[in-house]
Structures are given as structure tokens and as C-alpha cells.
Image (cartoon, rainbow, N blue to C red; front, side, top):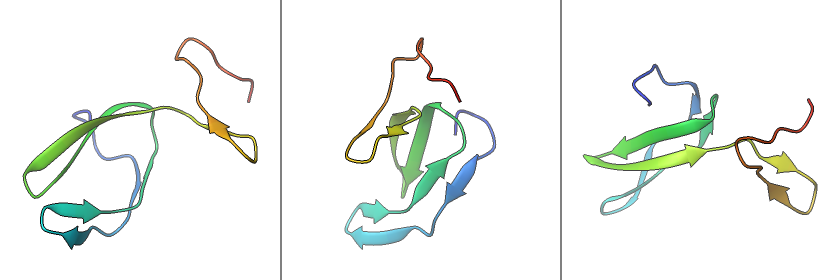
Length: 67
């Protein structure tokens, strides 16, 4: 991912159907990542989420909450 060693945890990959795969992923870093399986790839952008109980949200990159 991002040309760097994989960071975070990546669970077992399971084939859910033809051309469809699932896996649990907890990235260790924010930013753009490329996730691929069986020759197909997609780019995702990971941001830190803030859990407020009923809702989880992200902030623009230029804003940060303390802590």
C-alpha cells in the first residue's frame, strides 16, 4: 500500500462470490491506499474517524481534534 510495507491489520481474505472478496482491514496510517485482490484494484482514502456514540465523522485534513 502506498509503495510502503502494509501497515495495520488485514484479516483473512474470503471469496464472497465470483470476483467479490471480503476482509477486515484496520489501516495504521491515513492517506491513499490501493487495495487489490484477484488482479482487480481500487484506491481508497483513509481518514481518522471520531466516534461520538451515535455517529462517527471525519474532519478535513487541515483540521485536527486534540488527542
